Image 1 (spheres, rainbow, N blue to C red):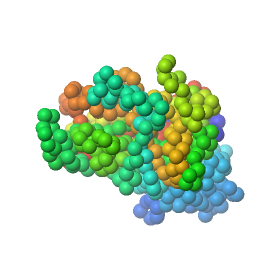
Image 2: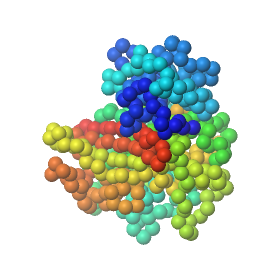
Image 3: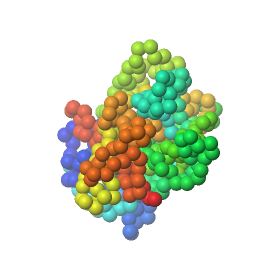
Image 4: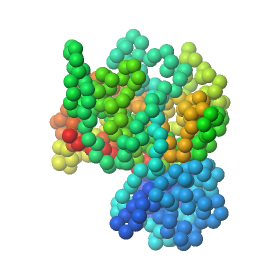
Amino acid sequence: MSTSLHARSWVTSANDHPDFPLQNLPFGVFSASNLSRRGGVAIGDCILDLQAALESGCFTGQARIAAEAAGRGQLNDFFALGASARQALRLELLQLLDESSPAREDLLHPMNACQMHLPAQVGDYTDFYVGIHHATNVGKLFRPDNPLLPNYKYVPIAYHGRASTLCVSGTPVKRPSGQTLAPGAEAPTFGPSKRLDYELEVGVWMGPGNETGEPIGIGQAGEHIAGFCLLNDWSARDLQAWEYQPLGPFLSKSFATSISPWVVTSEALAPFRSEQPQRPEGDPRPLEYLFDEQDQEQGALDIELEVLLLTALMKEQGMAPQRLALSNTLNMYWTVAQMVAHHSVNGCKLQPGDLFGTGTLSGPQQGQFGSLLEITEGGRHSVELPSGETRKFLEAGDEVILKARCRRDGEVSIGFGECRGVIVG
């Protein structure tokens, strides 16, 4: 579901806004000095207060039920309602905010005067590894002749992350400590990570979910996807190198994961659906439970992804952030529907507000790599910054900024807002 290219809003800032025009309408949870935590909708540089809109009688029927759920201090209840309720609310929001409707400035709050919170209470967080170029680049660092393990092209690889350390954009990230093994050493030492990194990912919010023991078929997976956000899977590479065998990441990932505060719905992204890129010749066809013709034809998303870095010195000198990478979600080897189908195929229960990460979505070329590990080839090279500084990994005061943009001829461009985090220590 989308709205007209020519539709405009009485919220004038929305009509040329890079992220939040009328065609987007993402959901989030906010508070202000005189307001408790509540749900809202981003429109231009403002937030539409759903509780205030409900009190004014703005919604009817199924849309009202959805607005009541979305107006609370968490979006879990809203996600649980599924696509039909979400679509009903979107239709009435489009009408309410259209320039042909009476202006209701009393329902708006300036976004810069509000504090954003995590959109939902996350019961479980799973981080996938569907960015094949990232998997290949990282594999080459450790296995130059065999970068991808044999299971990669059969299984959407993932690990179970730590939901308790998910944090909303803008939350400072404290440098973690742990065990590391220095080159040539026989025993590890303990101390702060010296190889702190970011990872450029997209987050996927789960909708209704399934009952234990009841897999979600790939043809129905889309009904269980509520929306999307940006996600930065902060990574301590030196801790990771020592701990990841034989069971995978642990302390190197569990200290912090930043997400953007706005949930961009599946309906807003519908115009930017795309055919899943063809697998290289010789790659195996997905197993039957992971294959669906419609998913292959329009299950991919065309979202431009960007990473920028702003050091403390650059900030002091009034310099703009430096772009480190520009990539795209079309670099996903597996679709989101395939991720949902695989996660649940063993009967695992997925619940409203569960969060998936896609894994790092690097492109195949320099300038498209979604982590410093890839850009610097494991610390062999340095990134040159306009301030004269260099970086192999993140230092104290560095701020990483993730952005996303959907563009397509004949459609209004929409964005995700930002996902920011400053390194402390």
